[in-house]
Image (cartoon, rainbow, N blue to C red):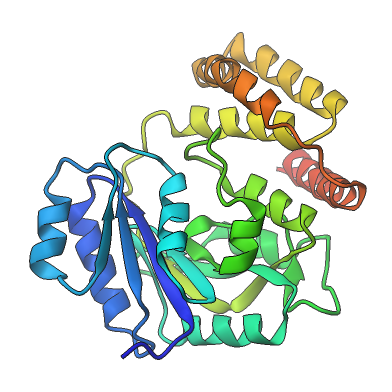
Length: 294
């Protein structure tokens, strides 16, 4: 029996062993959440493993890799009012989903809840936790925790209606730093995005660096600027990346990939409302100050 109003969506591709571990943790929770696994066209036997070892888990098998859009497929497949995202190497702490549901119940404007993340077997605090907890946007009277415009996807819980209202993760980005754009789009629609440190997720990422990750994140940061930020800002970020590309192969790759996706980004361009742009600039300034002191 499902004892929670929070369902869980996992997007996966060719990660059968870690997905097995994640599902065992999630299905062992007292909350007994409904779980939907959206398979991004795995070729490693993931679907056979799911059918054999987890016959009660709903699986949506995609014919091709759709990146972060697989999460939206999963959200549409659930009918719970709230949806938690897990990656195939992450899961939720006991009691976390119930606590998230209580906070979402109590705060109707809350569209996305960002949790604290504990990393690896030692359960070390992810450095992002402190960044989010000390966000200069501060608290809001109608939201729990601290207002933010960023989060870690595998440590987030969304109000299903808010996620769909904002359009979910954007197709132009695919994967890699895709969270900021969703936070912008939620805020632009009037939904709150808040970090709540008492909701906890566990993340056990593969310690092997992912090839091309730096380039992908930088590409998507630039595309996010062109999709939602003022033109002078987007142009300045482009000039910055062009300068970096002269000496940094990852920046060069990011620039080339961004250029290929730029026509689609321009077609989907929708600048942020003034109040959300002000919040984004406050966060930009805070990030620049931190970077200057490192």
